[in-house]
Image (tube, rainbow, N blue to C red; front, side):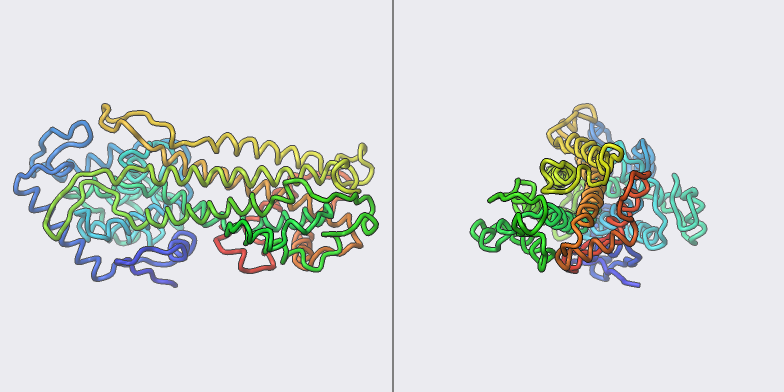
Length: 515
């Protein structure tokens, strides 16, 4: 079992993946423990001295001018946590909650937050024991960070709320007892330190980007199969065309598709070689511009992942303690705008990949555009509807993705009696990005399903070695369509293949988890 030591080094994508999708255990480095102890001591001394410190000896938000006596400091933090845990809606996926817990541990481990080591250790204990707080998906505006979702994580430390465990859902108090752990009694600033931050929206983003690596590879694979099934031209994928533009994603995508179609008897064929093939000097954009469109999305994915990894290492609560000179400074690092804007950018890339995929599917089923293939890719069209309705489904999914791609970060509704008068809506952007990803997975599954049918109809002409391998993987689970049958189970099997089982012959394309 992998062990991740949280210290002064930023988290990598591989480390994050190992924790949130795997079973890697987390522990604090000695250096991190020392920093945590120093800042906790500074906060405790400031509180006992009667110094005015936001959220420690004052109220919160518009109650910032209300003084709180040191004697009430523990009650203040307890009430803060329970009052903010008022989310609604379905629970966030457990992988997202694990991401929230890991990222909060990392942020607090840097020693700028004033939390005690014993409190942070309890959060680590829950993560390692796979005790996951039940966190409702709705309730954050991404202003003082993700207050509401993070409060649902924090209440588990004090034995309040519900959690999911390896043996099922139970109360936090019962889960702590079963694990031999005591609830934490929060003290100076600890509730605030646990709540202020962008870890929910960032976790949503990281789960999406890590899963997206797989679907981006499969989108290229689906394009390669469609290119072959439509007997398309290969010139547009020539490395010289890509090099003169200089876009890294475009160069990578074109190279992938060339590798997958190498040795094909279909790509680049002439009209006399394949029945029904017409002579065109150029293919439609959904084929010819795939390197440019898929490549742009890949460049976005790389950019957004970089932004999320910066945030994964960031101190995002308030106020911030600087141990070197014992300054306690109020600021706005909890504001989610950098993450929200990055996630909106990712949404556009995911939605656009679904859009171009559906256009290839539509071309495959249209006998006026499919270069000699039968209408809707089935014998006796009219008696059989064939692949007609899977394209309808893809169109519906793409339309939904487009509506979700509308930027969330351009919206703002003031909260906290107008103290928090500009908010990020980053949680919305994160949830929408994950939702679009799941729509994209189904759209790509449909393209693969339809392209496999088309390639099977091109026999005995051989596809490239890579696409032949993919076709064989699909056929091992989904038979060729001869006459109309109940197709919903086929699409469900294709989605399962896309999410968990299909492997692109070029192993380098399949980075990222399949869960």
